[in-house]
Image 1: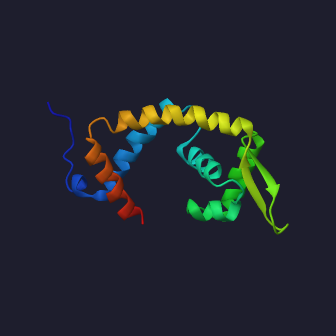
Image 2: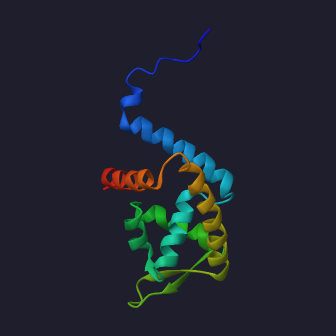
Image 3: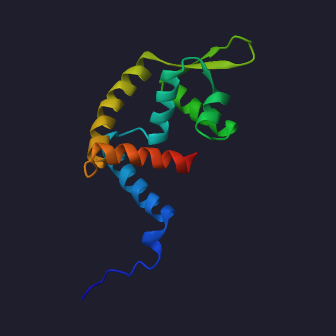
Length: 140
């Protein structure tokens, strides 16, 4: 008895295939980088690459609501991974990684490199490169 469901139109839907790929990637990420979500790691990477970035610019970069970003940064600051410092115009705060934030990010990036190799293991280097290009076209 074959219990597999017929897929109908699902295999031809980009959104469906993207969601399945995202779920597989997130499962592997969670097993690889315990304690940090992909979104939080992305924020740490952006702050590390842009020391002093404002919460507003960070929210814009990750396409998140500014009010949501305040809570996320509060959590990162509460874990002593990020610190706020007064900005140039005294009305804004810049964000910097703390020493603990930089150390955590370095450990996470080593695990992420292994995770990336695993999830792309069925792709050639050229296919991986092309997939990144195509996903960039979709995400704008």
